[in-house]
Amino acid sequence: MPPVVTVGLDGSPESLAAARWAADEAVRRKLTLRLLHAWPLLAPEPTRIPAEVDQNYWAKRLVHTAQAELQARHPGLSVVGNLVADDAQHALLQAASESEMIVLGSRGIEPVESYFLGDVSMPVVARAERPVVLVRAEPPERRQPTPTSRVVVALKLHGSSDDLLDFAFHTAAARGVPLLAVHGRSVPLHARVPWGVVHHISEDMTRDAHEQLSGELHAWRTKYPQVDVADSIRLDSPAKAVVEAGEGAAVLVLGRRRHRAGLVPRLEPVAQAAIHHGRCPVAVVPHG
Image 1: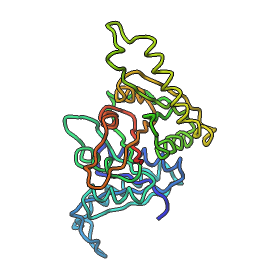
Image 2 (image 1 turned 45 degrees about the vertical axis):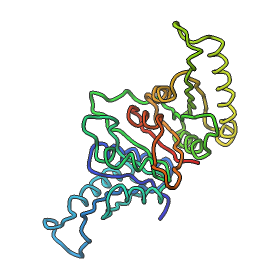
Image 3 (image 1 turned 180 degrees about the horizontal axis):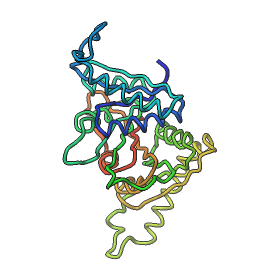
Image 4 (image 1 turned 135 degrees about the vertical axis):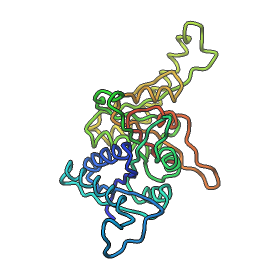
């Protein structure tokens, strides 16, 4: 199979928004788009059967309708449909291992969770061996203004991953937009005073973090000279700093350490905060 971007379809507005985003990204990266719909009750494909008695009719219609829309939007894009008789989580994890990235719909935190976010998305994000991008579908009354033209990447500053930075820089380069590298650092209690933060401590913390951040980015600035890179040090909780930096971004990119055998996969607080509260597409990149 050629390199693909895979999107999970379940018929929800969120999964359709994810499919449109994935199609745009596949065009930018010159990749094939795969539309995946997984359902354990899919029947074995018969050779000939009328549509009115075809048990798989609605699954086929879901994929074919999305495929027709996306190919109309992107006439030169290669789009393939994929119906799988399997549970969604297992099918998506398998697809992730075969894809450049996998894209899923997300509602963030809502009274009623979407199928993918509630039952599938979070385990896939926590376990997938390739980047997972979560895309939201905002209702008109909550839709944001046009996103700012930049990609935002969250960095920890102690051994940031090559996979994370390569994905972030590649994404910015493919879009032809700047990259903002963000680091959030909580201020220790002894540095806090009733009117804020002790000035010399905040200056020292900011200067130290900026030097480390510049060091992390140096090789990548050289590898991607076409990408305009800025950095931001925020003396706040990392989760809050990253979510705020991602407001209106084209894509917010985060890292996730691959889980070790025998341990329960989990997402760190920064990733959870971005997935649940961020409104832009959030890419979670496994590393380590």
